[in-house]
Image (cartoon, rainbow, N blue to C red):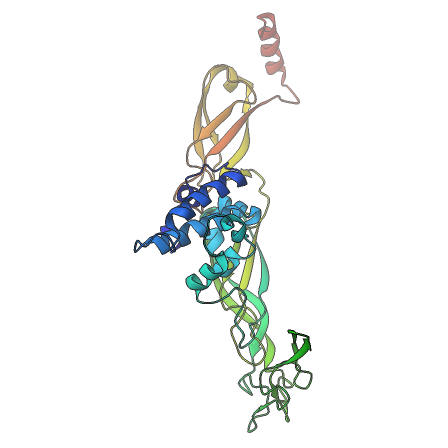
Length: 362
């Protein structure tokens, strides 16, 4: 589970404001200590993978920003292990250390080279934009959404062939879906792979297409999906529902569904990270004499105590009355900014009192 992982900054022993050079320096030091080629301890490989993952995330600006905002949940819900390590130039880090590049290590960790293994196609990912209120973001919610997506055809079972018939292996590519062309130039051979033109890369031929899906194997349907939005989300937060995206043609794994959160502006509160900011108006008499004032919170009304002589613009902090943190069990605060209300119109009695006060220098 992501919440059992150690903090990436703690793993690399660097502060949160560490520069990329600092990250690289600390990673090199730890890599020398825990690299499996040098350290034969039982936990060396696990430790090396841990520090490598921390470096891969923190050395990438986009992943680092996502981690700083949402913690491990923001990384695990958005990136696969393959995605985390993609694009990081570990060979540059290891170049003068004296052991093999990261590519071979990656294979031992994850059982294969980078890039998706050949096989059935994967369906397309889907994006769904969900608009919620600040109150819903504060409490979290479970919501049912309707998502248009491709589903496996129920008539042909996804084969694309009319019931009673079956797809046939393409004789041109032997079912591989691609053709390899090899050319020789002296001692050098060049190989070029391209999709099979006869089956258009599917590896099969359908002589009698299904009337429901017209040989594609999938049809468009609206599907209702229940999602759980955790408390504390903000605009830009993403929920990833694995295997809830489009079904691919010809079988294979579904894509994923990405639910992107948009929190509506609020009439009373503005959000600053996990803190909430609001303004409240008080009468001049309260400002001068002090006393208790009722202020709004997302949990209901609360009261703050004003000291005599409270000035306009004074800020009062209500502890743990802000937004929940996605990263841990903490909460932000609510900051209440006091504004003195100057009436536009005065009654005769009010005018007399103020005139008397003005004689006293108030």
